Length: 317
Image 1 (cartoon, helix red, strand yellow):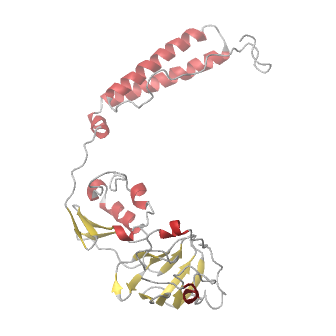
Image 2 (tube, one colour; image 1 turned 60 degrees about the horizontal axis):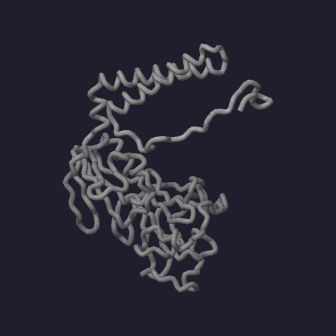
Image 3 (cartoon, one colour; image 1 turned 120 degrees about the horizontal axis):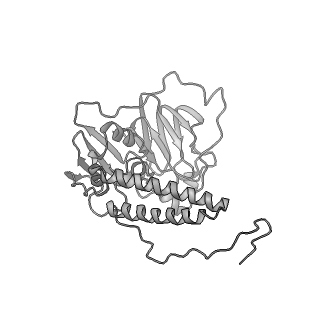
């Protein structure tokens, strides 16, 4: 169409862009770099010919194509000159490390540590597969954990970020294993569990320093969360009101130390020890040395128990 729109006189409508070939990506390697480099060279030559007519917009477009062609050429040259780059692109699938399973806990042997994975405690927070994608391979069949795929100190940080304690470790290089945090915390996750981080004795047993405990009442792995709150349609805020400042939020003299959490039969979680209860965003909700935390999902004073477990017939088994 000649003439163009009123705001763009002299412009012409062109054909729409169509994909005439398979849109699947090229296989990685030097051949794909060569293809793109050659196509950009062709586009740059055509742009230069069109720019000879003197149209400012065509000249500007030709300049952009020339820059892209130059970048593609440099990238192709750098790839060809770097054998390491080719190895990185075509890296072989790593050999599966030695692994064993006992009591539902998988132990994967790395050079510097033994990585432990307990699937029943996993709540799929995804800090592992997003923070360490070379170590934790998502959506693969067979071995999926490769502890030596990243520096050990960084991997330890990723393990510490796992709120459920499904990922733990034992150092083999003489460095210290995980220790209790300086403050015992229970974070209330939005429409989800309590994420506890502390020197915990759960029902009298030391089960690590991180765990997520069910508060919807629907978990099939009580007292741990198994993500049943999603299917159960559990709705409970992760931002409950802060308690009265001069009582329930007064600073504790000691903020760490042993923390006993005892699930009462068909009842709440009985907590004894120094504990700061926070909202999901970290705001202090309450500081306690003993409390009964709701785990039936029905309390009207969440996160604390108000006896509703008896009314709703909550069962802990």
